[in-house]
Amino acid sequence: MKTKMIRFLLSVSFLVAFSFTSEAQINVKKLGSQVKRSAEQQVEQKVKEKAASETREALDRGGKSLDNAGSKATSSKPSSSGEASKYANALYVSTAGTARGEGTKASPLKDVQKAIDKASNGDVIRIAEGNFLGNLDRGWMEIKDKYVSLEGGWNSDFTERNPTKYITRIQPTKAQAGTIGSHLLDIQVTSNKHSQIIIDGIFFDYGFVSEYAPADPSDPRFGCPIGCETGLIKPVGVPPNKAVRLIGGKVAGKLIIRNCMFLNGTFNAIIMSNAGGDWEIYNNVFVSNLYSSVQIDGGLNQQTNAHESTVDFHHNTVLFSWTRTKEMEDMGYGYRFRNGVDHKVHHNIFGCNNLGALDGTFDDSTLPESKRKICSTYDNLFFMNKGDIVLSGTSGGKWLYVPGKRFDEVEMLKEYENNKELSANSKLKDFIEPAYLKGFASLKVMTTENYDANSAANLYREANGLNKQGTSTTRVSMFGNRYNFDQAIKLFGAEQGYGAQEIK
Image (tube, rainbow, N blue to C red; front, top):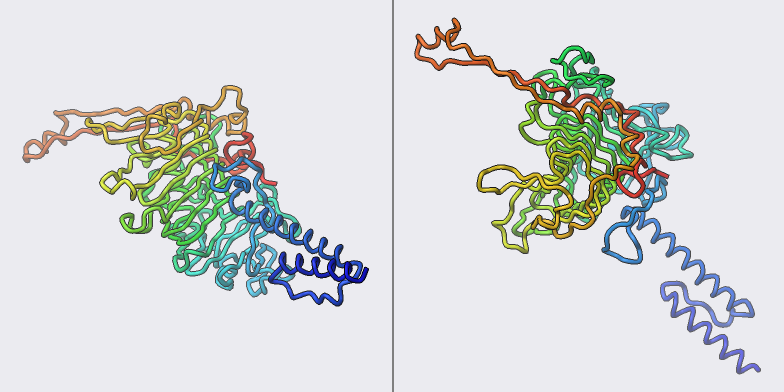
């Protein structure tokens, strides 16, 4: 009997030591009748910890399947939990805080920029609902030379988080027009390719700084469809209007932008350089941005650092990306396949993008095939774009506007399956501001020319050996009109499985 007991104890000790070699060695003499149950409890606890860790990692990867690593992302609902990522430390910001606060829950700061300046690498800034405008309300902020994350959407006492309920916004007004730089948020961090930055639950809106024509549909000069809250945007580059990025900068390492909203930008919503890292942009809403909604450039030498910069762009709703000017000459893209970056674009909704949902006009065919960017576009919904992807390279110089159903013919796309037009039965259009959608559907561009060879001015020019001149006037029925902030929030969760999903 004693021999059997010794053999049993030795076998259990061996199993425990084998399973947990990093744990302290277990003294065999102290094992009694409860040792078997104790070992089982340790195994059970290890399994639970491993599962919890994998769940957190999966949320940071945007809900990708754990069972099929590297496969296409699934359409799981995004989490708003502050436990989705591990951070070194958390600082807290609230409009009820103070300039000299400690940055704790009990003593929050009131300025996001001061929290960023105080934070260390790996820290997260948790931000309560409210409008935050940087130091002394200058209208912008920056993350420079440190890997710090921003997490908006918290209630005032930081007990609950829901970005579409407790809205954290960066929404300057004309009071900040003279102090805003070229960004609302500038991120310049390139020191560590193994670190990460997360921008989560921040709503950006530049629509209350820009000058617009009056909201008067009776005057065709104003480009204001009935029901829109402003007329067309006045020329960007002509004071007081200027080109401002909502997020700009250059980052090396992991960058995640999720659960955010980007409205009424005048020079791309997001325009950044990827200096080496796997980026993920998901579950965001983009509406009424000039130039493009998203442009990610390669920040490394493509010849020597091919495929070190990637972007996974998925489950975003991208609507009304406007051209550069009201003459509709160029730009107006949802997402741009820029050189030096590998792009994966899937499960998005691209609608009413003025020139094209996707920009495929950048050519890197002079590089060896192994160095060229890899582009994949699958499982997206499109509607009312001039082109679902725009291509160049025709001998006549004309651009090609290709619908999603013909993406299999686009050689630059590695993956191209299941891109389709929005179903007529979709309820998405019920969540778009009706006046804005109706105005876009009936968009008109009218150009008139006036040339009088015998006008006094032209006769004078002729007498002095100068060319005669005429005038040309372009009027549009709408262009870059401000989109309503509250209406844009409704786009989260408008189409199950595609575009920005409801945040839980």
